[in-house]
Each structure stands twice: as C-alpha cells, then as structure tokens.
Image (cartoon, rainbow, N blue to C red; front, side, top):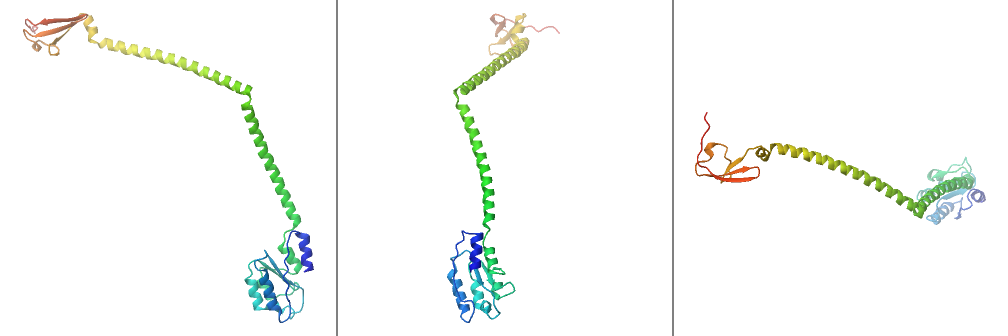
Length: 251
C-alpha cells in the first residue's frame, strides 16, 4: 500500500484513495476479499486489487471462484496487482487490467500530472489566442460603430447621399426629356399616317361624303332614289338635300 500511495502522490496528488482492507491469504481470505470489494462498489471510479508476492499457496485465495465472481460483477474497472510479475492467478484473468506490481497498477489508474500541466498550458494558449481574436473583432466593430456615430462622419454621409441623389435626379430628368421627345416623334409619325388615310383629308381636297338618312353611305346610284333625303359632308359642314333624280354613268 505504501508503494501505491507513493506513486499516486507523485503522479496525481488530487487523487482521493479509499482503502478497503482484507485478509489476503488463509482459509478466511476469499470471503474477506469479496467483502472488501463489495464495500467499495459504487464508491470509487477504479479499484486496485493488490498484495505482495508469495508462494502459490499464499496467493491461492485469488484463485477462488467467489473472488472471481466478485471481480466480474464490480461496477467499475479493476486492476489486478497480485504478487510479482511472474505470479498469475485467476483474478488476473477476470480483472479488466493486470499490472505486474502494485506500483505499476498505480501508474495505470492515474494520469501524469506533468502531462496534464502540458495539456492545460496548451489549452490556455489556444484560449488566449481565441480570446484575443474575439476581442480584436469586437474592437473593430466598436470602432466602426463609433465612426458611424461621429457627427462629422454622419454629415459627410448625408452630403454624399445628397450628391448621389442629385446625380440620379439629373439622370432621370435627362432620360425623361429623351423619352418625351421620342414619344412626340412617334405620335407625330402616327398622326401623319392617320391624317393621310383620314376621310377629312380627302374631303379637304374637294370631295364629299354622301349618306342616307339611316346613316348608310351612298356609294352607287342604286343606293338612293328620287325623294330620298341625303346628307352631304363637306369640309366645313353638312348639306341636307333631297334626291330629285338619279342617273347612271354611261358605260
């Protein structure tokens, strides 16, 4: 037990050790070992079953079936460190790990404090770098917000925005003028085409449009007869007339 405690104190001083004493040889030893293991069940993270070297008869309690079953049902890992390296018992085969000596068992169940210090130091370095990165990012964001809240910067932003609006307004005004001019040209062309086919244009050249009282056009002699009323549309008005007679052109 002294060897185990010495190794634990050197490698992992934070370890809390719970000792469950028992007989390790003799007829009463198997029951004592089972009782010791049962007392530890549920109270530890790992257990070391250990004793010093001895003859085969001295170690015979660790070949007991009851001891083997107690080791098998133990709720957490057990390291068997019974006797010296050359000694082998059934407990060694049932345990989760076999250690050649009790000191080796203590090494097996504990981390190395120096290794932990190195890992903690590496983690601290990584954490420091990450914290610096986060703080640097927040400083940049705060500086950006400060510049936005600066009255002079805000005034410059307003001036820039107003200048951009003026530029856009000028562009829109020019585009509006070009669009209206193009629309006028198109409307003028359409009006000219419509004027060319307008009946009024034909009338202005000395022609007339003759229609019956019912609105039907008189485009041949058979369309009216003597006594029918007709309306003659000329350039500046209408002439109401009555047909006296009709005459077909000679063929």
